[in-house]
Image (cartoon, rainbow, N blue to C red; front, top):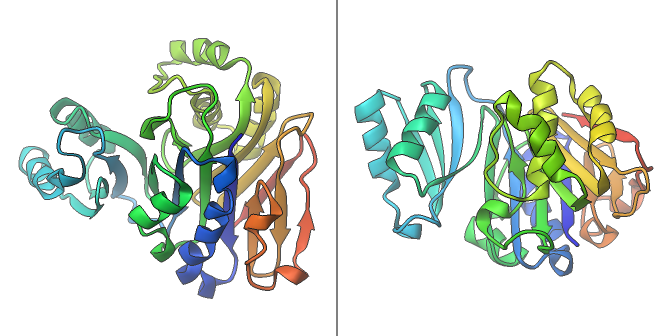
Length: 302
């Protein structure tokens, strides 16, 4: 059992309050996922020549005392990467005007205990072990700004409680997925994808779904086509919530065993596993509230 939340603000004035509105949503899912929590927030994209890389140092020897500024100095010295960085404890968002794949290879070679969380022009990602309240406070989620976000609280059922197995999962650039449920064929999906050069970081079933959908996007499908093919390839009970730079997308399996509720107004679209995580939102009494249908696609655009 896990909890999912999503929030897309249509009204530009609400973008400054995105984190403030989201934190009660995430904490409201504590009973559904006390083991770990995380979120991906989408901001206005940076310049086309720049990529943001979200990093986690909690598995490194220095942990929260990791020398982030030393990392930037090394990168700029060895690669002329024009890197800058914003750090929050054991998380940091590195901005580089250089090939992101080259930078990530360099990080893995020189700092193998750093965990790369996400890459893109719009996405920043934070996730860690702890209750949703603890993780929210640790990384000052209430101060986050942006257009939309995807969040998750985890109750581990099929893999260990570790930061890298927490959600959201990412693949490629500017794509993330959170999941409530379980897949019955994740290893079949892995065997299908690995001959295409797709590598996996964990044994979590959600990673298989994330990498499959991103693979379809990489092959030229739009998000809706990728999701339709997902219905054909991904077997199990699930509610998936996905984020891209300009969209939130929600699907449930053909039996709709895992709960989800949506509230939509002229100002926002909010999604959660239970209504209690939506009850505090502004003007919620006048929202259109509904339960998503099984095997249907719901896609909202910024």
